[in-house]
Length: 502
Image (cartoon, rainbow, N blue to C red; front, side, top):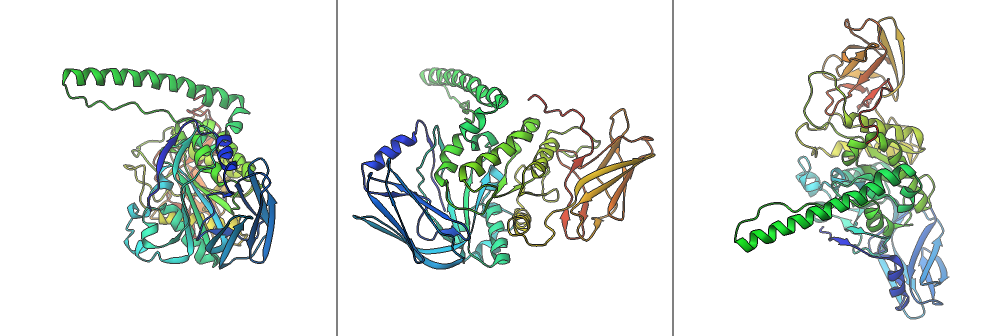
């Protein structure tokens, strides 16, 4: 399943709408044969065309009409139950379009950077999963990777029925999530993949959501302007050197400078064309590109979620994130870590916003590869979170998360949420805990499970003031619950962050 990648500079929505107004009616490109429509919600259907033309949408006994005004039309179908396949017809006085093989079920957006983009064919031992991927109840929509300076309504793609050929280049995390969800819920599942490797969070946000915060104006929007000027200067110097080398007949192997990410450009090109297609929620695997600004991510990431929810017009739809996997060299002693701070910022989003869940993957990282290939546990843990948060199933969907600490003498007693059937240490004694006194110098600690608590101490610290667990770029940890889910890294302190002010 190949998708085009392009850079659309200067694309203005009003021009697109003006072009549409000079032609017969058009339908938003997110609609096609083989699509999945969200069950249990009103269904927006929209497009463009000649003012005054009446457009009628017919589906499962409903016929809803709208008159095109200012080049645009939109109807809202009543909520329907899961099922299919059906036909879906959009018609006017002069033309009718019928989509076939349409299902109703659960629709999820799969977004983020390269670990969401990572295709199934490059994941861990994918052959059997690809060969068995024929499933007419799973549908895939790959969003073309397009950058845009202004919100765009264009998208060149179409829904496809899940098959070995279609799924090979589709998001591995997305597919494993969708497969597990479809097996558990027994309804059709539609997966919309909209991701781009290396992308920071701010490129997935609207301009308005950045401009309202003075900090983002200075640290993101203004900073981009300066970075782009530096890029232009570097590009001019590169072109001058290349031309001189060519003129002299000399080889030139220097790489051209890369343009900085422009805030909002992927929101404009890859999210806006989907709005307001009815969805159940989104899964998100991103953060590596913001790790150096983890303190900022504490607000930026929740604000991105708020932006999507507001612009989709579905209030608090479920949003599920993947916590960063272990990466970089394993250190012998406790140390500060911007990746640990980013994981904390991700976890905090689950505390400040409703219906936000997190999949912890401390057990499937790779210190030598930022792209760990074991994506099946990632997708399946996201599916567990979806079943609990989006659908209200009474299941354990998270590993232990830090709740509180109590200091007694030379010991720290930690309590947790999401204990499930109880706490356990995998493969020997607990590891990954560090403790410090008032000097704030952390040392590795002894840790023991006592009931549903963990008791931490060290002979080097007589009066502890803080405990950390898995606080590292590449944590080596083994606290789980007996339901088979790993504990999230955490710290009990609020010592200054190394990424503050970046």
